[in-house]
Amino acid sequence: QSLTLTVFKVTGETNTDDLSPAPDAWSRPDIPLHALAMLKNPREGIEPQEPGKVGPIKQLAGLQAKGNLVAYVGDVVGTGSSRKSATNSVLWFTGEDIPYVPNKRFGGVCLGSKIAPIFYNTMEDAGALPIELDVSNMNMGDVIELRPYEGKALKDGKVIAEFKVKSDVLFDEVRAGGRIPLIIGRGLTAKAREALGLPVSTLFRLPTNPADSGKGFSLAQKMVGRACGLPEGKGVRPGTYCEPKMTTVGSQDTTGPMTRDELKDLACLGFSSDMVMQSFCHTAAYPKPVDVKMHHELPDFISTRGGVALRPGDGVIHSWLNRLLLPDTVGTGGDSHTRFPIGISFPAGSGLVAFAAATGVMPLDMPESVLVRFKGKMQPGVTLRDLVNAIPLYAIKQGLLTVEKKGKKNIFSGRILEIEGLPELKVEQAFELSDASAERSAAGCTVHLNKEPIIEYMNSNITLMKWMIANGYSDARTLGRRIKAMEAWLAKPELLKGDADAEYAAVIEIDLADIHEPIVACPNDPDDVKTLSDVAGAKIDEVFIGSCMT
Image (cartoon, rainbow, N blue to C red; front, side, top):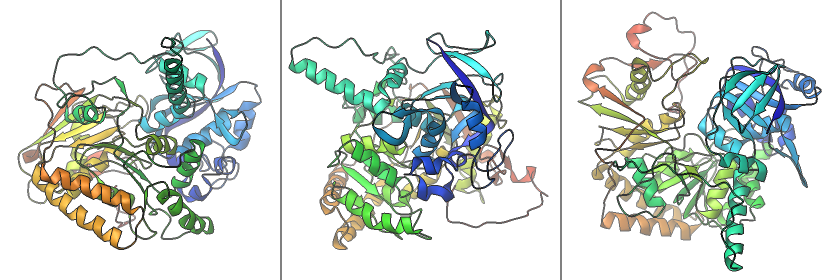
């Protein structure tokens, strides 16, 4: 009914690289060691023990000495990458020991004015209590009372914030030690009671699905509906709990070792998802000794379970995973930029990625959608990158997005970004748009394309997979199965389309005739976009030219 908490307040925006720094990726499977790097770089109110090396360990110990559970509190929490190691690090200092499981913790409380959707889901998976509420009246070291069922936070007996949890099922997830144990336990209970001839259990809180509005469905809602086995043309309403089929699952090498550990926890000996792919793109260029060891061991672990393992030096996860996709299907991946240009993906932390690979489904509370509709023709000199940045620019103009972190407004956060009006794009070009939905903190993205570019892409992808089989990539059976699925689609190429009367949380219309100049993102925030003329004359101190689109 009530929790007494000591506040560990991190002002401004905390991204997952602050919590789990990329240079320390090699230590992520060793949770206590990796947690030492959390918030290792100095920032307002945070006192690293060794700046640049060790985070605020003594500061956290001082808060823990008060004898209460320490709550991680921030204005904007968990943006950026999908890495579960960020959650692991936070819970190492704020959670509780898992009985009989060393070096890993669960539980804990995370409070934020905005919590990024992937980070929120990963917290759920770890049995934590993530809550979005106004944290402006909470300061470092404050002792507060949290009443989860009443939806109130109090300080000195006075209410300082009110909230509503996203779903009452969250309380069951905390009691079960995480969303995945709850799903498995709930399923086993149902099957056992059915076998014993007992009535359905009333012990669990079940998701309450919204009333059917009778309106049409968006493209994303229809894709998820098909993955849930609904009749053709039907979709899943926002707010509905569902478990869509995961047709394609991706894993990369800085989170792959954690995904491997999660798969072991699930006792997974074979993947149920039709296509699970493991890349080695983050560590191939400058591998540490621990990476070289992982390069030798992880491919066999993946391929013996029916997955496809790439080779170090092959390239980036996204460019490969996109080549293995089937149109209008649903998937996930252990990288926040796993944003399918055809179909839809919901990126996740390594725990949920492992669950999706092992079981072939993923738990999903269907998000609302925001429609971005382009019209007209691109003007000379304008690039796709300008269209990417036009989306936040027009959202700011409509009052749907703010740059300021305090009281941050972001219409895209936790919602699906659905893009229309550019049907002639090549699939690779569509990925530039879908990929950047990660910077919007969107839960997922769809891009409406015509059949022709997808048919061209599928034919090329079949050739690539045949080359992979010929060159000894494993698992050859999985690649062969995906080739047959693509050939079946090409024999009868049909695409889902959103209904004209579908409902959206917001509609943003962008007239391409109004975009005459480049639109750039200002350091250090992809939401802070301006036209080139607005920043003309700014002194340039440093230029970096890289291959990454984001």
